[in-house]
Image 1: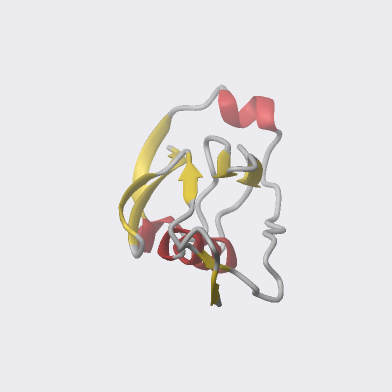
Image 2: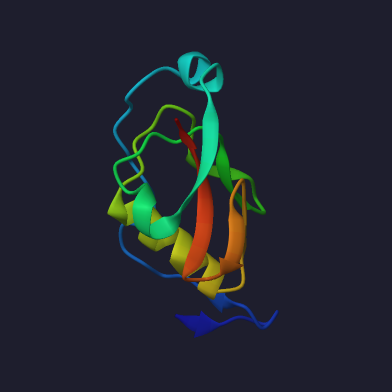
Length: 102
């Protein structure tokens, strides 16, 4: 990673995108009960909300997709680089909560 002119790290990862498996439709996921779950417990759970890298507003996960280790690593990398990920409760770059289906 390199330092940009704004002082934030730029990410130059191969495989920067998430391509999680879909467990249910967005509509089905949006109608289910939700809870916030710690990072270390969320792998394999079904995402309950849109998680965006903002700016520019690119969805990392959408409701109904399975949270995998690759997406969790990307979210950690983005937070460590000082970028904003909307839809999570960030306590630190390595510790955050994600919305999951109950």
